[in-house]
Image (cartoon, rainbow, N blue to C red; front, side):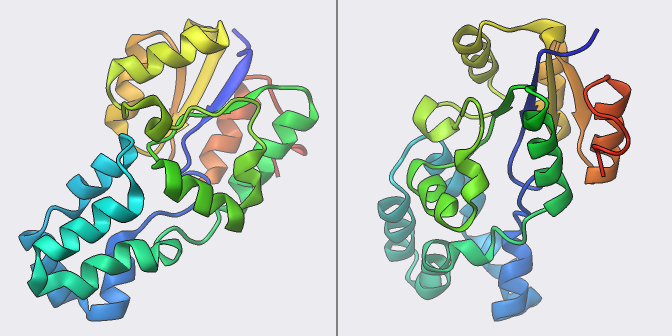
Length: 206
């Protein structure tokens, strides 16, 4: 069945999101491993993704962990260096779909303030037909509620939707709901899936 709307995750689908790579480059892999073992930075980021204030949350964690204060503050102060580069082929696929009148939604774990900041660097983040941003919704993938909210707001469900995400756990919940899915491992595979789904031609998916 040809989908009626296409849903993109953002991190590692449209923009690379690699905090470990950033810290390896800045403080070296051994110190990065030590810090990530000592501080639950991904848990901190999860709180931001669920709607806690970006600056206050990161700075509070930094003050609570003085041994790593400066490094933790980088999560905020140098955040855009972790969320780079753009995956250009994925952005082209998004625009190709929209040029054919296919609605494109985001479904992303992203903080309110960090998303607004990212959009100043990546204007395409303001170009989705519908935004489903966890910080505004106060729930993150793979909680089924965020998928249910998307269905309720869009009026679409099941195989009317096709969704790509780089995390298998996020894909699994969508599959349970009957969505068409693609585990993102690179834009070429996603392009092929969109061609197979009848949404793009080979030329359009380049």
